[in-house]
Image (cartoon, rainbow over all chains, first blue to last red; front, side, top):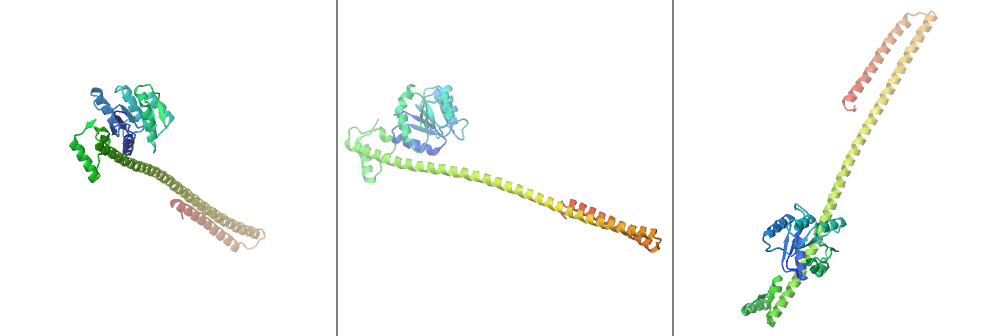
Length: 143
Length: 186
C-alpha cells in the first residue's frame, strides 16, 4: 500500500472517482486532492522546510485549468526545484506521444491514461509501485 | 492500528445491529479487532457495506463524468454550429448585397440603354426631318419655285428642331443627374 498520495487535478469529479478507486483497491489510506498546480507548488515549497504531510507519490493531471502552469511544468518543479524524493507521474485523458516524451524529460516516472475504467490501470500501477519507489522501474504508460 | 476498548466495541456492534449504522471509510481498515470475533464480524460487515457504498458512488460519479463529457461535447458542437450559422448568415448577406448591386447595375444599364436608344431615334428623326426639309428647300431653289413659304417653313422647322434637340439633350442630362443623385434609382 502506498503511504500517501497527492492528486493534482482540476476536475473535482475525478477526485471522487480516484478516491473511491484507491479505497476499493486498497492503494492508499492517505489521499489528498487539490485542484491547482499553484497550490501544489505552494505545498512543495512548505515541504522543503517541513516534510510533515509530504506525500510519497504524486499524480498530476496534464492540463490543470485555472493554474499558472501545466502538469509537466509542475513535475519539472517537483523534481528540480523542490527536491526529489517522491514518486511522480501524469494522470491524463490524453495519450499524446509528444506530451508523454515531454513528461519523461521532465522526470515523470509513469503516465496513466484516464478513462471510465481506471481501476485496472491503478491496479497495474500498484503492482509496479515498489519499482518506482526504488527508482528501478522504467517509465511506463498505463493505457 | 487503532485499538478500541470493549465498551466502545459493544456500542458499535449494537449500533450496527439495531440501527444499521456502521463505521465508514478508510478508518475501518485501521481498527484492530483484537481477536474479538463479534467485533471482527462487525468490522467485516462495516467494510462490506463501505465497499458497496463506494462502488455505488463510483458508478454514479463515473456516469456523471460521462454525462459531463457528453454535455461538453454537445456544447462544443453547438458552438461550432453557431459559428457555421453565423458564417452562413454573413455569406448570405454578402450574396444578397452582391445581388442587389448587380440588379442595380443591370437596372442602370437598361435605363442608359433605353435613354441611348431614345436619343438615337430622336436624333435620327431630327436629322431626317432637317435633311428632308433642306433637300426640299434646295429642290425649290434649283427649280426656281416660290421660296417665300418654303423658306419661312424651313427656317421655322429648323429652329423648332434645334430647340427640340436641345430640349431632349437637356432632359437626358437631367435624368442622368437625377439618377446619379439617388444612387442610381429614378
